[in-house]
Image (cartoon, rainbow, N blue to C red):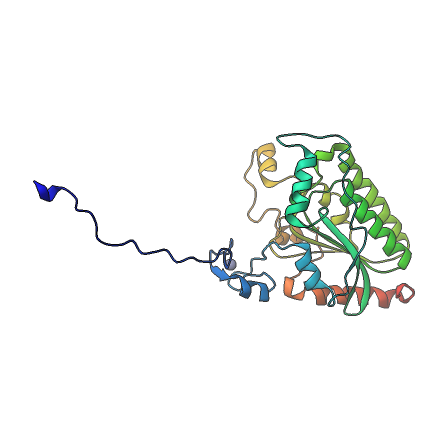
Length: 286
Ligand SMILES: [Zn+2]
């Protein structure tokens, strides 16, 4: 009964070829496998289905502003963890690890820049830093950016990418809603334009404060925009939600956005808006 025994295989296993990690990426929208370098050339938009991939503040700075004109300010403000917050991990440890992993000091980068030679003050959020959550540092940096826009009389651009207020800082995060909103009201009293750009996702306290307070509110296609998330709303009202609920297109159709702009056209559109306001209010031109 020898033939029942499996003979030891003489076939050598083919050695797996090493595919360098991270060269290809799968599109969440259509499943297409895309070469990362090609995706970067297309500003991280899938050419097959138009899905706008989530990108960091560094990429947005390259896309939106004239080469090397972005000058960061207030880069060293860090959270002091006044509540000494702990869940599974201490907030302090989590914060320090995120600083190390992302190279960012918090969830927003602020600075001055030029966009087609127009001076602007900009605050660009970054979802990689604790879900772009808005704590005391984000609120403070944005408030100071608004102050600089007020003083210089330069248009303000805030690009949001945020899950909302940062739980780890409790009520101090919530206070940032009032702080940033009142500063924006002061900016508006001087008739300085503020353009808000909402990217995927912009939710919670960020939507409930500066993200929806732009003179012009524009969003990237397909971005999740809302206050509470769809799952929470569904559970609360006990009803199925309409298709496309809380996506840019739905939010615009219901009157909460002025425009949806493809990432490839974002810069030009902002320039158009800035020049429109300058024309309306020539005194505001720097
Ligand atoms: Zn796709």
